[in-house]
Image (spheres, rainbow, N blue to C red):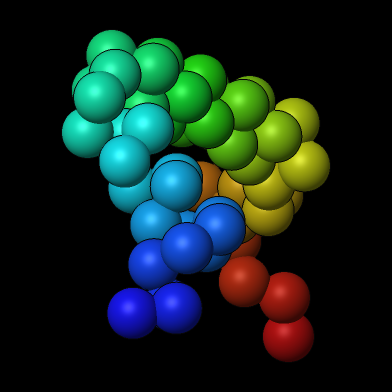
Amino acid sequence: MAFFYDNSVIGAIQKIFRRPSDAAMWLFTGMIVIGTFYTILGPAPGPGPNAKRRR
């Protein structure tokens, strides 16, 4: 039973179940931050459908 005493993983899970709104807030914030970074640093757009091929 020593696994359950002072275990940070168990403590984090208990916090999530006690305050699910905090977990939802952090997930939403993470989605916004990741989406912003992907938009800023994401891959360059490819050629359009009317682009001519080089030979």
